[in-house]
Image (cartoon, rainbow, N blue to C red; front, side, top):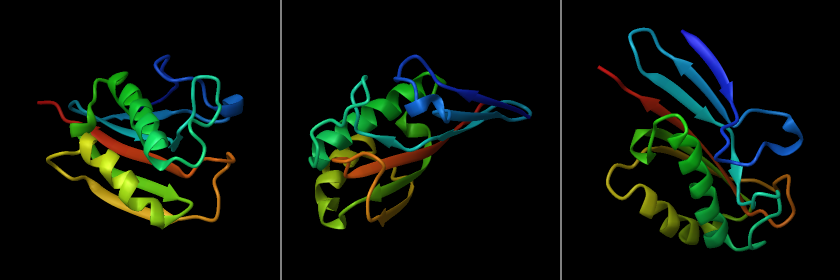
Length: 136
C-alpha cells in the first residue's frame, strides 16, 4: 500500500499550509481510498462565500470536493461517506437541497452533527468525504 498526501491545484492551498486536502491510500491489486479534509465555503483567496448562507456555501463546498475528487480520477458516485458539521441544524433543509443534486441516486453513508462554531466566522458548515476507487 502507498500513502500519498496531496493538495491538487484544482483547489486553493489549505489555510496556513497546515494540512493536506487529500490522503490517498493506493491498495494492493488496484484501487484507492481517498480521505478528503473538511471543506468550507471559501473563495480562492480564503474568504467565506456568502457568510451565513447555507445554500451558497453548500454549492461552493461541493464544487471544491468535486475538484478534489476529479484530481484523483473520482466522482461523487465514488463517495462512501459524507461527514457534515453545521453550526445550526435548523439549516439542514437548505443543505439537503443542495446535497441531493450531488447524490441524486445512491446515498452514501452519512454523519451530520451540530457544532458550536467553525474556524472561520460566517461559515455555517464544513463537509468531508471518503471515497473509493475500485478497479478490476
